[in-house]
Length: 171
Length: 171
DNA sequence: TCCCGCATGTAATAAGTTACATGATTCT
DNA sequence: AGAATCATGTAACTTATTACATGCGGGA
Image 1 (cartoon, chains in turn red, green, yellow, orange):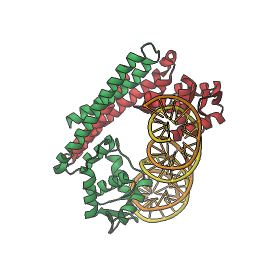
Image 2 (cartoon, protein in one colour):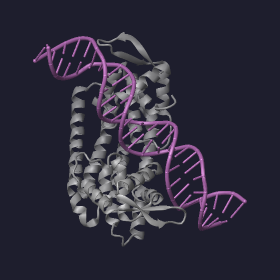
Image 3 (tube, rainbow over the protein chains, first blue to last red):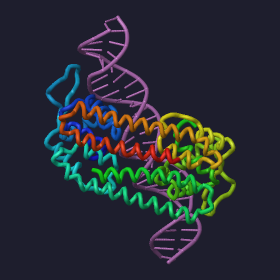
Image 4 (cartoon, rainbow over the protein chains, first blue to last red):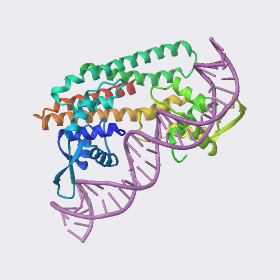
């Protein structure tokens, strides 16, 4: 699991739901979590090959209608996936958090509480940082005419952070 | 201005504020709009070279204390920048919109109204799409146990879109 | 028959980060 | 003397998208 780790987990996650072909994985992302994650064939097929080599997935005997190849997750793959899902790391991106939530079995969702809380804290910290920056700006660059635009763009960050914090609280 | 267009504008924008060295451009992004944009030396120096070749920027005679090289924007560069700032294109990313706002001279800010409104419309459309998807989800996958996680991740998109729409309205 | 959707896979390109090599100047 | 900061530049690598090549099977 040297490189391309994120893409590997994204594929592994789909295979954990049910055995799929590369084409189906692509479709699954398009019809499912398209708003925060997508994958192209250029990623999926090489990753499937790697996963097979690393024995985290295997080619099914089943040969579909038109030369399609279906893959399943192995026990070892499932273990690797679980490790990723519940492993703690700081500075987790929204994309990764969402993907974790998406693939976590319902009964194990509570194990992600820590991740969500970490995300929540990060968001709050970021928000505070924006407020501090804004304050500092107003003090130092008081007469600078570009201050207004500066604040405008800063507010975008504030809005986004607020949204994240609110969402995390709701979760 | 063939490729790497975005990075080129990002550098051109900084040069439009005042003549700068590559190092200063990096710092300016770090201390300024770091929350939505950053650039690495690996991007900046090659871009400065290209811009000079295309006569959009020029090396200043001025040679700084330790072999530092300062660049200025040319008239042609300023024109190119303006074209980018106020050119209309749909599906503008938040990053690009913010950068446009950031570099727009105050007196020309109203010219960006259209861009902001486009962004606003995109956000609202996205929000509506999320709502529709959610509705469809609840109808079709009624008994699917993963519905809850699905909705959770969808809500993140909703929150984010809402934040964008609110921000755009405020602007 | 011809087009569309299914299906796999590679190559080229783009955008960006990180690491490295190199060296001057200022501060402690 | 040594560390931090200033300063430029290249090479390697990562991540992801797009385009292309190829071909099967089902429906209008």
